Image (cartoon, rainbow, N blue to C red; front, side):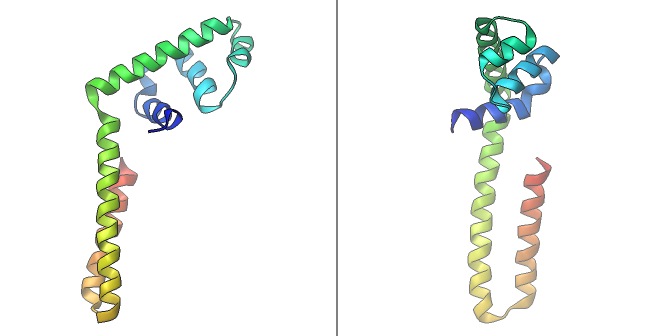
Length: 121
């Protein structure tokens, strides 16, 4: 997984467990893509201080993930969703040739429920 995507997911899942100051600096660095110098100027701390804080936040967030595995589970569910949708699409394509409307409706319900599950996560 790309570093920026992983860091974004870590923040999405565990960001509320950081202090307000950590959240602000981490958001500026990771999500808003500000340079350490820009952040240092904004918060009145050194560039090295920003670097250290980001590294500390990364370690904290990775620590939560290593214990709770929410991201790993989320990614696994997303992969299973893709697999289900692929099977449903194959079935729909097959049924298009057979014109089996009730079964097609059931497949559309499965697709809708699968998408709802992901949206609820």
